[in-house]
Amino acid sequence: MLMTIFQTYKKTITVFWLLISCLLTSCLTGCALFNSILDLQDNPNIEPAARPNVESAARTLTEREQLLLEAENFYKKNDFAAAQPIFIKISRFNDGAFDPVYEQALWHLAKIYEKTNQPEKAILSLDELSLRQSRAISKNKINFSLMKNHFRITNYTLTQKIKKQIDENHKTKNFTLNELYEDLLETTTLMNDNYLQADVLFLGEIQKYFVYIMESTLAPQNDELTTHLIANYEYFFSVLKKKSYSADFKKKLSIALYDQLIKFDRYEMSEVDLVRTAPLLRFTAYCEKQKKYLVERFNNDAQ
Image 1 (cartoon, one colour):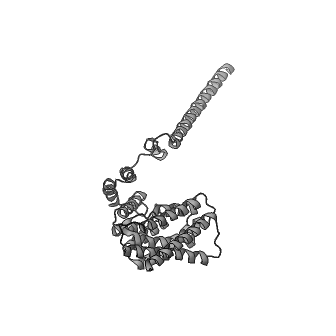
Image 2 (cartoon, rainbow, N blue to C red):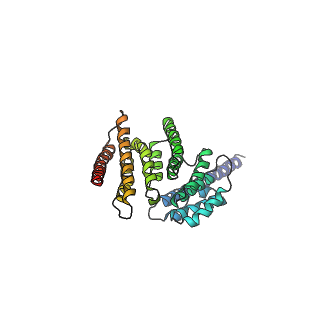
Image 3 (cartoon, rainbow, N blue to C red):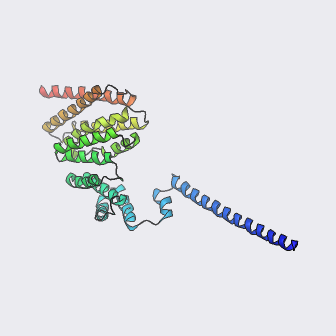
């Protein structure tokens, strides 16, 4: 009797340890597989398209998500003719109040229309994102782009209305400085010869938001954004040296540039608590140099 009980106990213990061993083996294999996926994702020697996606490994992408990825790949290659109809197809349907696929499609459409000199169509996509109170695209990004495109169609009444909305949003501080940095970087590359004067006016309005980053300790973003702002101004100043533009146009552009540099000075002087960081001082010095250059141009033109 005791022998039978002992043999039964021995078998139970053996089975128990076999189960534990199987479970440990499965867990270790799973962890190793997951870590290998992460390693592949982070490996700079592997093409991005070949890197596995952890989320897609957990579930199959929907047809709309696959279409979005396809269109985004065309967009990244600047193949707007191929990307645009796919984004339009996605934007014909939305899945309720929060549909990130729909909102990303609208945002990309707005950028395509902007790049192909169709500001009115860009505004329609941006207005839809604003009305939806998009959670996939930041409020700052939408408003910066709306202001830019309204400047391009000379709707100055709405640009001032949008400016007030941006200021109200900044009072709430519902964003990080890094998010603001990324939003400004994406929406303020203004090298479009078709809207030079409009973009100068837009830059003059938007530059005070650059100051929030320039005066911060967020490095290297504060210095990078200063360089980005200067690069935009440098592009406009390069136009003044081109023979392909008329003297009258260059005079108007010069006046617009001078006004925006003065606007920065006024903002800088009005902000008593402004932190004079190295990036901010660099842009201040740049402003002084460019104002002197413009004054010399004005004097030469007057002679």
